[in-house]
Structure formats: C-alpha cells, structure tokens
Image 1 (cartoon, helix red, strand yellow):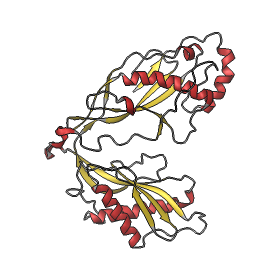
Image 2 (image 1 turned 135 degrees about the vertical axis):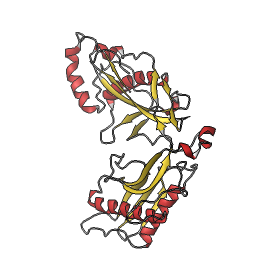
Image 3 (image 1 turned 90 degrees about the vertical axis):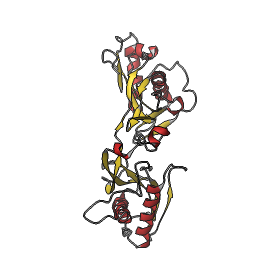
Image 4 (image 1 turned 60 degrees about the horizontal axis):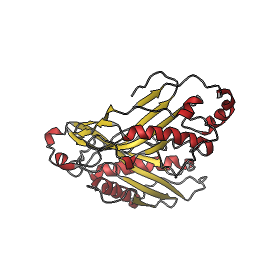
Length: 328
C-alpha cells in the first residue's frame, strides 16, 4: 500500500530551512528531509528491521488448515536452495560459497531420490505443512571442513526440510566436495547462509546468485492481505509547514482477523544504507509515528491459505509528498 499526501504551499520560512534540509536529505536514506532544531527528542530506541519480510504462511495455523484436504493443494511449486553471504567483505570467496550451495542442492536431491535429469517430489518426506524456510548458518573453512547450526529458534511445527538440508551439507563435507580455497584469499573461513525458499530469484540483498532447484511440492493457493480501510493520515504540521517530505516503510503482522498486531510493527530500512541519526532521526521518527498511527488502526482482508484465514507479514509504504490527494 502506498499513501501519498498533499503538501501545503511553501511556508515563508522555507528558504531559511533549505540548507539544513539538503544536508539531512543526504544523510537520511528514507528520503526524509530536515526539521527545525526545536522539537521532540527521538525518544526511546527504535526497532529497525532490514531486508525482505519473511515468507508468509510458512506454518499451519488453526483447525481450518489442520483439516485442509489434499484436493485443495492446487499449486505445484519448486523449492530452491539459496546461498548468501554474512560478511560482504568476503567477495574473493563468492565462487566457493556458490558452488557449496550447488553441491549441497545436488546432495539434497539425491536424498529425496532425484536423478540428474529430473527433480524429485518432496512428498511424502516433506509436505506443504513443513517449514520450507529451512535456514542454516554455515562456517566453511580453508581445510575443506564446515560447521553449521540452525539459524532460527525452535520449536518448528516440522523441521524436516532443515534436517534434510543439514544432512546434505554433511554429505558434501564427508565426501570432500568442498571447493578448493584460492591461495590469494586472506581468510581462513567463510560465513554464509543456506536457505530454502519457494522462489528462484534470491530475496536476500547479499544473495550470490539464483537459487538451485531441489524438489517440487504441492501447496494450497494463497492470497495476500488486502487493505480494506484506514484512518485519515495526518501530515505532521511542523514538517508540512516547512515543506519537508518523507518516505517511511513499516512492516507488520496482519493477524487472521485482519488487524495489525501492534507489537509486530517495525521500521524497515535498506541494508545497504546507514540508519538516520541526529536531526535526520528526529524527522524520520516524526513521519514514522504518523505512519504507525495509521497502520495500527487499519483493517485488512486477512491472508489465506486454501481459503483459511492466516496471519502474514506485510510491508506498507507511506509517502509524505507533493502528490495531490490521499491514495491508499
């Protein structure tokens, strides 16, 4: 959802504020400009999140899904294995990380009975009720060994995909299939992630390349949350009067009743840009709180799986700018 708000005609003090606004625009990656020095303090520490939202509907919720018949599994998807770097400075080892993911994907296909020329079905070992987002934190070393641990906390409704991924990685290490370390690489180890996802295109900003297909799986049809209504959006008057614009992205969990969970609302920030500080943070927080007030009182048609309402994560964009009207 994108909300654009009208901006009043420039106030007389606009010219005096332009130098400060220009300086803070450069510092604030969300596109917020400056505000006068007088104003509220930033307040308590704010919670930022980075990167894309987690896969929605990754675990069954409630009796409706528990009793969902196989006849409603109408979507056949391919599950892919992705590799992405934890340390972006380890770029001399991109090939090693990519090939480790490729060989782990091959071993995982073999564990499921796949052949070189075809993808296996994940069923019945893996089902749509499994947590497909299996995620391992891996430390690969120059000597050809690797250690790993599950990145996400327990318990999961079904950890079969993660356990299979770990077995495949162990098989790669045991069979000495780790890629030779380049002599010029100064590092003795490489930290990376291996993650399963229902998408060939990497959804991580530090992903190395397209995912490697590992198996197919049937899923119920899903629908994302749809905005039904929201309260009026109020442009912070001190920023409006100074002709200052802003851009805020909030992330929230929309529950199965179509209401945002207040405790889940976070500010989303691009991973590759510095977070705001000083006056830019004051401006950002002012816009963000105005957006948060709207999101917390909005009403959605909830996400669904096979017709069953479920909770799901959404990113909501608010543009406080010069476009006329308010458009959800």
